Length: 414
Picture (cartoon, rainbow, N blue to C red):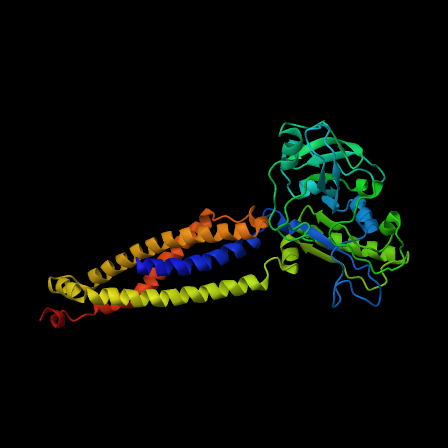
């Protein structure tokens, strides 16, 4: 039991850290992540860098967001930004609340495969068209309408009457690749509205907002007309081969804007697919890898201790093994017996490690509630846990087993 517990501790420590790395670096859209791109344009001033040493800003301006989206050079295109505002349900029994809102284009939803429980998203409206429609998250629909199909219902919020056109199903992409401004594992928003609503109602600027101009004043529309960045811009291309054509379009766009007095620096566009973007944002921090390497070292220590305990265990039964050899058992039979014992110890260690791993992951979810949506021990990880435990026990018992096989029976039968 002590041997199994020793193996279980080492396995649990390594599997907890590995589980974190596995889930934090998981591809959120594996079937098309190589075709969905985050767009960056360097509209910064000539003598400064948006991100040192000389990287473009991670968001784009209002002007660039609208120009590129409505140019329709990709299969899907959408800009978006996080904001907030008061939601005042018609039912007096439901108190008003401050809703977290994502203002975006309608193609945001098919581009990111957002699942719908009821209804559907709006289409990308023309540039100057303002429609007061909204899509609710599943939890918001439950909170306001009791979970029923609320498509077609009206919802007072932001001082206007909005029509519900869709209700999302459970959706919490982790990491939250399309907007990491508030954290890679920040929970999803309560409501979604067309991007034009943000300008029409002058909603607050959430997320990352950066400006290099200092004389834009306090007027809301002056901000939108400035070089300040606040909007994430994503596109989905029909195929990976279309990337070069889209990059050529971006270069032409920047040159056109440069002729209008913008983009004073040399063209430095960035078109990163989802996995490249997550790597750029270092979603899995180097600290996690340090903990993982430390856990592997701890597992090695546990293996050495388990090997020492197994050596002691097999030494105690040397006389029994010698008697078996004297009665006709060959070295292969003795070795097989020892290996079977170590595999059984490994299975017990896997069970102990599995329980400790579950407890450790639950502790992480308790300390970091934002991780609740994605931290689980799925079947592949369970299989890996069992295999590592069995392999570890066999490695730990290999040397003691070989020593037992090579015993001289006469020495123990005197």
